[in-house]
Length: 612
Ligand code: AGP
Image (cartoon, rainbow, N blue to C red; front, side, top):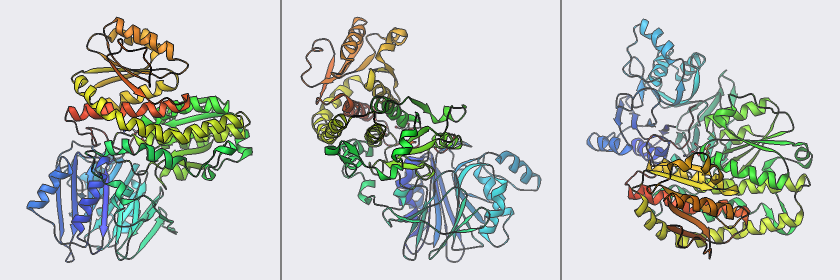
């Protein structure tokens, strides 16, 4: 949450920063600001409440044309309302130290009181301003020393960038939780909270680890731990294509990312499977035969959409490995005392690799002896580095706040892991694995067929249903988590109340809600619970609910019963959750567009949730 960008070099500083913020706006968008320092030491700052466009309008009237280095921020408010005053950057008491920050400084009130008693004047309600004052108080000519002295006094989970007018031509970056990535250029360097801000300029990047401080000048990068020990930067080359962070002709990133799913699934799959051998090869999973044989239990740790992927993963893993699987929210797992030992596999699912709750829970699993494998979309992210093994999803950068292609890629990764473990612990027979892998290879083509004919139909249905205020999504078995995911997509981007339920639970409560105003989205593929789903649909119709049924092609059983029918290509049961996700994403998308909602940047949300 919150996007931070820093630049030092010969390009027009304000332009690089604003362009970087534009690419990071999915991290937070309730206010924005920029600070640039000129060759003669003049500090120029502009801030604005609201989206980045408001800041750009201000900059058009009062441009910041000069400058050799600077910082910018797009905010997701935690402490203090999203006003111009609370927008970052914030300065110290003398206005010479400038800070932008992501995360929370938990002891800011204590520090604020102490500094107020010594004459410091605070202008905002933010925790960030306290960090600026503290660094200013400890400044004695060297910015990095002032930061190093200040860090032990700060409690919390934070990442920040600092510049000092009186120690010019450098940006100091600190990571104690939320991500910081440094992009290395020729006679110029970049700092940001996420790769897309930097990708147009360089693919050579260094990810700061927790507990590290970087001093970035136009020619050098020096990294130290919090004790001042020098650390050799680990330079990585990112293979994402800069084109992937553009809309490429689509109206929204979300729509583009929905259409990218066949490609994302192929990329996550290819190079990892040997269908003729009935096996998968994922070297970075770092689980050898002996380690696999030791596993007697799997705990999945995730949040939000990734948690829904985990629920599907439970079905895959139990069915293909014979092992018991629990799925937990990171925010719950971290405060429980889970039963974990060295025979437990902790499976961490996170698109960003930075979600605070997921990361805290994974640390607990690790402390208790579990072996950790993360399913992650961002190379070098915290989850990938803190796990023993990692299975990357190759979805490419996901910019839309509502997760789409990352989710379906996570399901592919989970199937791969299930086959990997099932083949090595002897539970999954070679022939069965061969069939599953063949089916997986055909899946992108089925998704493409779906994407050809679904959008028009769903757009029409969306027009008719967009005036409804409550939706119920029902599914059974492998499609029950997809019902939850469909409901989450709708509420996230259209602000319509939606509940996802296992269809068998409907009679235990939610059935009371059904009347002629309640659309019920029923996932009824021809699987082993199909007839049960038909009965549930009858129950909805008997109470005048509006049914949108998703069924296999040529299913005629619901004609004349369901109000709307969407047909999907017939695929084997394990593939159904992946395929059936697509129409639910499109339905949510078209309803949100019809309502005029901000699809890519829905209110109150942020792409990576790096606070508790
Ligand atoms: C998905 O549409 C959400 N915006 C959200 O639930 C997300 O999946 C969750 O915050 C977890 O993120 P992660 O996968 O990056 O850990």
